[in-house]
Every structure is written in C-alpha cells, then in structure tokens.
Amino acid sequence: MHNLSLELVSHYFCPFVQRAVILLLEKEIPHQLTHIDLMNKPDWFLEISPLGKVPLLKVGSEVLFESSVICEYLDEVTPGALHPQDPLEKAKHRAWIEFASTTLVVMYDFLNAPTKEVFEQKHQELMSKLTWIERNLDTPYFGGKSFSLVDAAYAPMFYYFDALDEIADFGLAKAPKVNNWRQNLRSRPSIQRAFAKDYAQKLLMMLDQRDSHLSGLARHSKTLSK
Ligand SMILES: N[C@@H](CCC(=O)N[C@@H](CS)C(=O)NCC(=O)O)C(=O)O
Image (cartoon, rainbow, N blue to C red; front, side):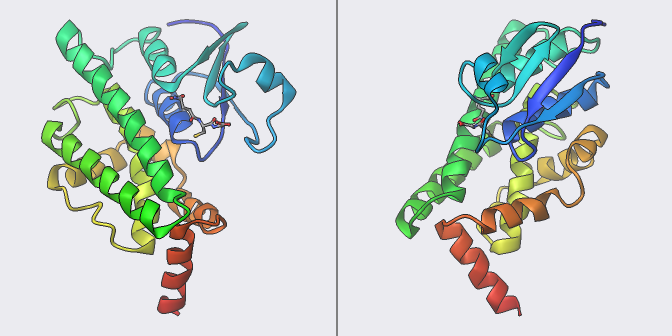
C-alpha cells in the first residue's frame, strides 16, 4: 500500500469525478476531497490542470488528470486488482471504460440540449449506446462475477438516470441486463457511500435551473403532478 498523500480535486456533480470517488471508497484509500467551482475556477487549479477539468488527483507533489488514468493508478497502488490480469480481457475492459466516457458525453448533450430536435437526436444516440452496452454486458457485474473498474466507470451514469426517471419515462430502463446491473451497482456499499441519498434529487434541481429542452419538460411534469 502506498503512503503518499492523496487529494482529489472534485466537483460533486461530475460523473467523471465520482468514478474516482467510488474507487477511493471501494478500496478504502485515505484521501482528501477538495471541491471547486467550475464556473469560477481558482487560479491554483488552472495552474495545475492541463485541460482545466476535474477530476485531478494530487499525489504528493505530482498531479494526475483523466478519470480512467486516476482510477487505474489508484487500483495499481492498492491490493486486489479491479482490472483483469489477462491482457486481452484488460484491453476489452479499457475499451468499455472509454465507451462509458463517450456515453457520458452523449448523456451530457442530451441533458443540455437547447432544442427539441437536438434533444431527440441525443436521446436516440443515448439509446443506441445502451443497446451496445446491453449486448456486451455480463451479470451481476459488467465483466461477470466480480466488480471491476468498468463498473465504477458506469455507475455515476445511473444516478443521472434516476433523476431523468423523475421527469419522464425516456425508456432508460428498457434494456433488461443494463437494468439488472444498475440495481446491482446501487447496492454496492462503495457506491452507496459515494452518492448521498438525495443525489438524484439534487441533480434534478440543478438540471431544472438550466435553460434546456429537458428543464422545460421537468417544469411541465411538475405542473402536471400538482
Ligand atoms: N475525460 C475527462 C472528462 C472530465 C470532465 O469532462 N470534467 C468536467 C466536469 S464533469 C469538467 O471539469 N468540466 C470543466 C470544463 O470543461 O471547463 C475525464 O475522464 O476525467
């Protein structure tokens, strides 16, 4: 086990940050969390963040960026590998982590789509991504019996799905294997600790404040439920 001081520079609603938080909790790695305001990035952050994005992991005086790299590092310096040993399996897991990142970007565009047209296009793209995941998913976890880095990479997406489910049925629970996996991840202790009970509700409030097609739908659904 390493004995370096670890500080994760974070934003609570960033799904990429939450991957690293899950890893830190899953492996019970002592760390410090520092939240920053992404609308008003502090100078010290801009000086050390090559892309101006969170998460960053400060390891002593070194800085790591990119969530998948941070998660692999945290996995490698602690016992109990969450990546397969076999090179081909490991490469496949890395590929599906990359796919998770692409899916999160599509989800972000869906959440923030300014018009109905863009919203519908992004919805279709998101559903197509879920179909790919459904076809390549094992159970109870992505790679089968054991929890892996792939699971940590996708788990944050499902909290966004919880928030979306409150607005309307977007068909996100249609894929049976994805649905089952979503429930399994929800009951993992590290994931429960990474996301407060009201995380989805807070996401909903945040989405509501935006000027997007989705926030219009959210306001409409609230009016209907009154
Ligand atoms: N590929 C990056 C993506 C990280 C990312 O997009 N972070 C967002 C927040 S969720 C960010 O910091 N955005 C600030 C900006 O782009 O100005 C990773 O996996 O770490």
